[in-house]
Amino acid sequence: MNNVPESQTQAPSQSLHARILGELIERILSGEWPPGYRIPSELELANQYGCSRMTVSKVLTKIVQAGLIERRRKAGSFVRRPHSHSAVLEIKDIKAEVLELGLAYSYEIMSCRKRPSRVSDRLKFTVAVAGPVLDIVVRHKAGCQTFCLEERLINLRAVPEAGTERFNELAPGAWLLTRVPWTAAEHRIRAEASSTEAARRLEVEVGIACLVIERRTSWAEQPITFVRLTYPGDLHELIARFTPSQA
Amino acid sequence: MNNVPESQTQAPSQSLHARILGELIERILSGEWPPGYRIPSELELANQYGCSRMTVSKVLTKIVQAGLIERRRKAGSFVRRPHSHSAVLEIKDIKAEVLELGLAYSYEIMSCRKRPSRVSDRLKFTVAVAGPVLDIVVRHKAGCQTFCLEERLINLRAVPEAGTERFNELAPGAWLLTRVPWTAAEHRIRAEASSTEAARRLEVEVGIACLVIERRTSWAEQPITFVRLTYPGDLHELIARFTPSQA
DNA sequence: CAGTGGTCTAGACCACGTA
DNA sequence: ACGTGGTCTAGACCACTGT
Image: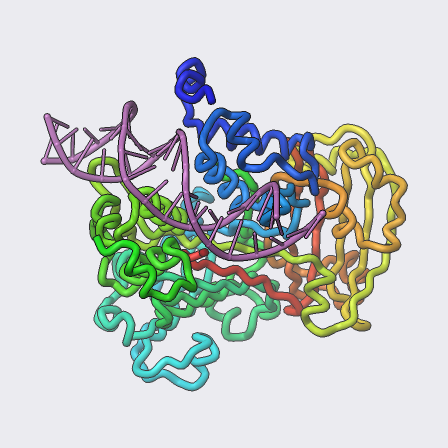
């Protein structure tokens, strides 16, 4: 009921949104509202905060997105118990990774050739690729040590300009990022003993434990590129974080 | 200007929200609105769709969250070029993982003892833990094969009831999920050659490539648990996906 | 049936930043 | 200065669902 006055006497530093969001999340995370607790309805909250139902509704929508509550018509909104361990994995540019370690970065194009797509490429792209592909192998170095082996296929139907690119200034991954939009990516991460081929290119012994990341990138259902990154030994570590509150 | 009639002649199956969202995303992903393109203002879109500005605003907020556009006051809303390779990594319950493979799941508590915290524990928890911890080793099996070795520390100051739990019904990870809220988790993922100790417990050869996931979980700045999961060989693969459209 | 969330409206004022 | 997004209101109707 006391609509405008309250927002004037209150610190105008943050929006009403933010204030309500913060207070509700605080109640949930502090355990004052434990898992299973039924939180006040939109109408009750709107009355408590002296604001419209719409405002409360938008806030609750955010808390749903954060995974802290779930809502059921007629029943109400309930605090969820902590659920799956999902986390945001950030996969950085290799150059940035190396520089963050304080090492000098360089790369060598070991091979780069245009060829028709093979049946085996379909396994990599999960969908059939007609037409030519660019098959590239790059060695990324940190200082004088090999940091990562990159084996990449680029769908030339989707990115024809890659066919004439020499990748002298930018490694293929960085070059693609500047040129091509992408809308979906799937990553597969596993440990693998280094094969004879990979060991030779990485300049390590055969059978060493490697972290392998495979990434399929597509744009509007069209495959763009497939890349396999092989990090030898325990040189490399992926880090993923989760926090429910995201503003 | 053709407001209500359109939404009536149109299939009423989806909300106006969803229709506008879909059409705008389609324009962006199809390349009709390329990166850098300035999309119509809220007012223009509201007129085009014959709806209120509020409705358009909510839709655009979603597209911002999806990372497809960025908005600047006075300037307008612009299509972003594809940015960092971040992805959502979902780390499932081990039992669920095994069952999804169509295998029988079981686990054995190999050791479980209460002890005071050591200096070495601080490295695992990244912050100091005073007081007792519960030190548990669990072997998870898929069929008759060892699927994963779990080495876990639980901060008994934060979760005192774990001290008397026998973990007969639920493995420690699942038990914790049902009992303890958590607000932050950090994962580290790497490849590692199996140590003598781990190889013995996993019943595999020494030096085999293993996928190692370490997870630190905390609640309101207080460490809850540290766990190291070791998956032998290439038995296990993590999958992470990114798609900008999420509703 | 009644209460709840889901959606939508037609306005409004303000903050900000570019022109 | 003015157009844009950011926020907010006080209503409204509908769909769903638990009692």
